[in-house]
Image (cartoon, rainbow, N blue to C red; front, side, top):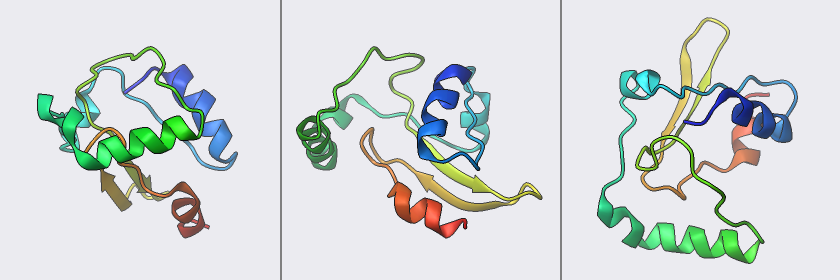
Length: 106
């Protein structure tokens, strides 16, 4: 949901051999059916747990960019353009395990 500079910054921290993309305009989000969170999402028990884990690890929320209600998603797309993996976040703190995710594509 961020700008391309955000994708470049964070993707490089994950691994050098994958491509991370962003879509500031949101049209790709709509095309892939990625939803938005409602006002009750802040009370989701799993989000509260994820927030506490992040805070305990020293992570803090920075300035939000784009549509703060837009949920995230993670896709693995192969060289032929076929989506091989899709994870649609159920709340802001819902992310697939990156080590397991990266291991699955090697």
